[in-house]
Length: 255
Image (cartoon, rainbow, N blue to C red; front, side, top):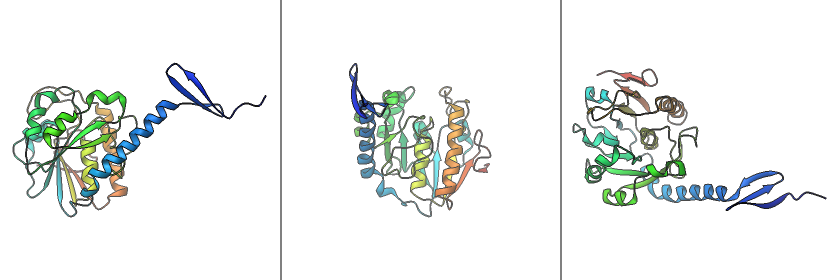
């Protein structure tokens, strides 16, 4: 008897779609498509207005590694902060990215919600994969902060940085600096400076605690960002200020 090319099977609460012998968890596939549509709908409302908005300008992305204590602010630059960088009082931030609500974020999230910066535009993340759902910044906090939302992949779901952030989730390599620099490139600046992104386990600039970063994943992520930027934004120069773990990846500057 001829075998059916397409059929459904039951596996508990899941439906299995059998196409010519290839079995697909149908509910899982629908869930994936739904996440893609949700991302397209949200990002198409948030990010088109920022395309090319910093053309000809300098951007500084400020992370919270110990080398930030050596950083000398760059005059007239656009500043993007991540995580606890808003407590660094030598600059006012224009943009801000955060997505991980695990410890120690709850210690400072309320203060970040209230932070005004340089009329700062905040972006609070939504993790699009179930394995990161518990890290998502709540809608309640986003409302308090007046923040726009964005989706990002789990670190294993996408292998290269995202070009069109107006329709697709952000590439993620275990650090919020990756959404920040993908956004920075999207705005098409003349130069991007990276400060306080030490990519090691030496803690934070304010000595609050030791970090638990996945250094190998983050380092590989930066290599992918470097290669991506060379292809899509060759006119944007990228500099590491007082680099530690990123030494030799971009143009190095010591202050």
